Image (cartoon, rainbow, N blue to C red; front, top):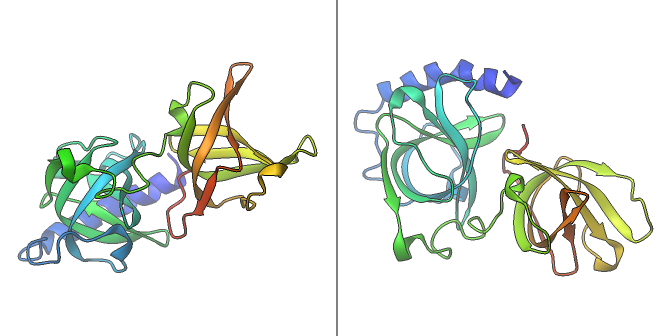
Length: 238
């Protein structure tokens, strides 16, 4: 079990008990609806949200956690967990939901939301789930582990896991991008004149191009690529 998983498991039962024990009259009804991800700046707050599930992470080694991952809306991104004891319906990656009566928390310096036995989950579909309404910029991000073809223009969200010494003068930067879904090599060309990526930082990269060499896929940053550093977003590597 990873250090992160041990920490999450250690806090799970006490957090769950505390939240449910104080839930009477504290649920999402009566609060501003919905609350954007970027507006969450305190813990212990009951609120309602409309979000898309951007990523689901593997917590199979933590019995207390039912699901965990990353939620997004037009304002930003936030980590979430659901407790196994809450017996909630499973969320699906890429699907949008209205979540009533979630509780804000904090883990490792980043705010989170926790789904519990008081949480009501409603799937959102149709016009209400359009990109300009939910998870703007989030729903187009491709999971690194699903890249299996070349010459596709895609958006990705990942942490710069490693930076390598460029092998030729034409390469500005090269290294490894990582997310919960996997890792992939990236290359940025000198002629593209892009801002430098920093190791350990998380970015949203729009308009990168997939490539393949000897059966291994990579992404290329070009002059068309847009780079956004995701400040305050929990790192997506393990």
